[in-house]
Image (cartoon, rainbow, N blue to C red):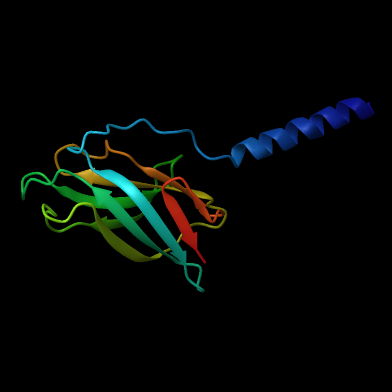
Length: 144
């Protein structure tokens, strides 16, 4: 009976640890006609809100084709935590970085995904998944 209990406890621990792992890699289109998130810097404030500085690259071609938004979402549910509207083309400023402050995440939210949107192609470019409990990772850094 002790062996079965030990096995059940081990299975439960493994299942718990798997649920805390980084979400699977996301497929994306690398063409610059699709808005690409190149880098994210996240800074946590003393009031537990966050500021995100997001660097985007896109082949902006004027008012009819430009990166018009980036957002921060739950990578599992798609729930949007924050949006940063990009009000104009950045034809001569590539890549460019824009920030959004006072972003609050639910307690226990460990991973967030930062996506950029092109007005013609939507959210099809590279995204960055940020581990809010890590100092840095591929394409992001955290400052506390």
